[in-house]
Length: 112
Length: 112
Image 1: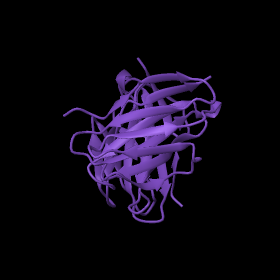
Image 2: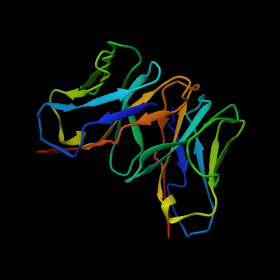
Image 3: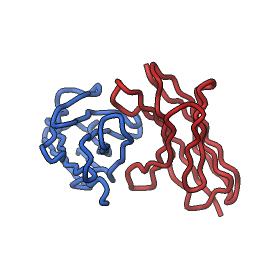
Image 4: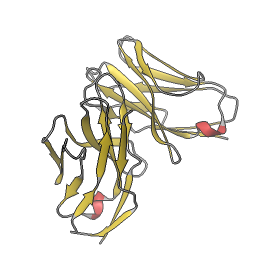
């Protein structure tokens, strides 16, 4: 069974731009979570989606948003990029909320 | 709130040495506990998990036992290999909190 896939793997943007990251969960998984990983803050939870509904949101500004589609694929969007948004963005999927999460390879975002 | 405290790194060991990476936690409910591993340039891979007290998770020679009385989930391996060099993350999930809470990670380097 294919794992979690994330596209693109690498992105370079400039301050003020916006970006959309995509995540395809493992087949049959209906829950998708997003995490941000930085050297300074470590791994921080962004949000979780299940059945196209956001169930939980981490402590991030409103510039960070996401959605989930009926096929469980998810996207996250960051508007008005700041230098501090440079990070590895990880998507994880699970069968249901509270089930074991399996991670994708991540999208490395660099903001210049 | 929920938190995970991991042994500070980096840790450097010789091949075939015994490995212990300490992990303790604080949780508001009854957590499930996980170890994830991250190889350079990759996402997180689930290494092992335990969902209730006294459970032992094991995989690829790694083991960890869920100790409720000491709120710990230490990772051990009897004989490490160069290929075990990676960053190891301890994490917990509390139902109702709807997110993984991670420790800061421990970088492990094995020298031949």
